[in-house]
Image 1 (cartoon, rainbow, N blue to C red):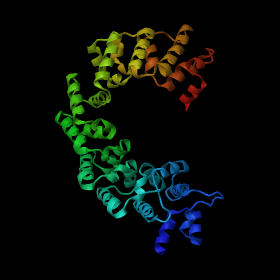
Image 2 (cartoon, one colour; image 1 turned 180 degrees about the vertical axis):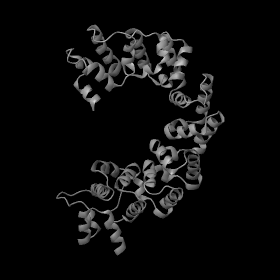
Image 3 (cartoon, helix red, strand yellow; image 1 turned 180 degrees about the horizontal axis):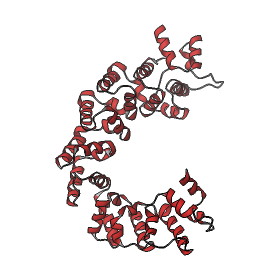
Image 4 (cartoon, one colour; image 1 turned 135 degrees about the vertical axis):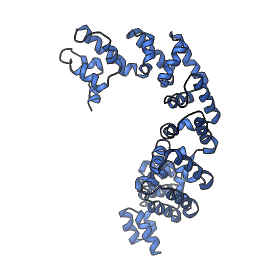
Length: 388
């Protein structure tokens, strides 16, 4: 009884500890109201109170989680055991709060039969110190996966390409769903296909680390993407393949075709579109409206030839309203007042240089000579944003 009381004290706030010393676990209950509460509302209040004071959740999060979880003030042994187990494995308050927000039912988990085997597996494979709580908090669904049939093969495959637990955690932070996904069903067949088609293992590692969603698609979709890109001249062994695959797998065949047709209707040949795509795959990730608007600006406002855009297709990804047109308006005024020359550098100024450099070189430099230049560029708030 003394040991249990001591463990409980570790989890409670200072105020609760004082209450515990003078009374019992009933001190966890919120203050008695003058009005009569229903059993349901009392239970809900207790849940919120426990989640805030013992688990570190904010009042808003605790209220939200309380709708998904029911605790009993006389049956706290399992939740308390879970919290003590997590703390014994290096989980701090933020890790525990994050974990419970994502997976409230962990408080009802059995420590010995559910949590311990998985924690033992991760510790054995190098997830010690802060790595373990970072891993579990990134995707609590890991805790519902079987060790032998799921976690082991997943971990072995990730370790094969990523190496250290540190790199695995970094990858899982970007794609926390990675280790809870069906490796045998999709990931492993997709990786085997890409390696067979010539992708180097270093690029597979990059794919897992930075573009994990690409590898999680159904195998038939991956087969389609690989074959389609090879037909366009984009081989899996090339650096651009990762980005091209990411774009192709993110849009349907019909939308892909629509975007091709939009660009053709604006004067591009299909061959020119493919050349531009191979240089900058995210070109075809833009919406049809964005493609139309961008091409209209470059062709009709900047008077660029199609070949110039094909050479630098990333131009089409820039925002016309927030970046390109404000810069162009500033430069038009400066040219009209003969403060800058109208030459090929105008295009570079509109498209290539950073916001900070543009502000310094073309706005603040001439602000005292051209009334309202800052407003033409976008106002005080935009300038402050560039300077911060």
